[in-house]
Amino acid sequence: MKVILTHEVSGLGTAGDVVDVKPGYARNFLYRRGLAEQWTKGAQKQVEALAAGRAARAGKSLEEATSIKGNLESKSVTISAHAGESGRLFGAVTSREVAEAVAAAGGPELDRRTIEIPTPIKSVGPAEALVRLHPEVQAKISLDIVAG
Image (cartoon, rainbow, N blue to C red; front, side):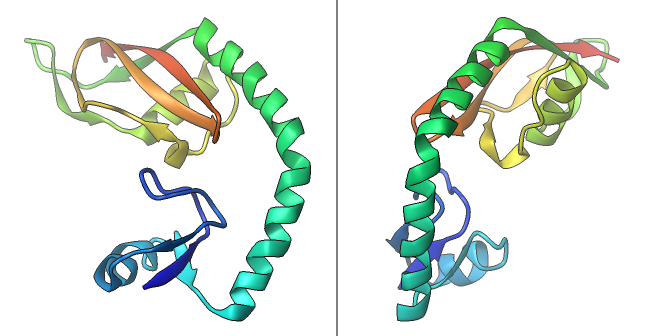
């Protein structure tokens, strides 16, 4: 089943890509979260028009993404979470909490969907998260998880 992605989906593609997925995945995951729409000839023409506009902005956004990357990688972000006496968290640190902590630390406003946490953060201490700023630029954020 062909679908057109409206947002970036990790492991699948970026916004505007036409991808072939199984019907159940499209119906139960992509459509329900607003990440894709069904492929039609009319929608394909709209995607091509959007791609032309996106290509014109790509050079400027790449420069902006590299400057934001330098800003993000230069600072450490502290996140306060509820933890037990052994340092184990009650739950895990989410991408939404990371985005809020970056904004509170004076960083840029990040969309939580662009933040990837490679392994679940479930204990107090240092951790890392990845931010996809541009298809060619990823930034590593140093996180310091403290009991709060």
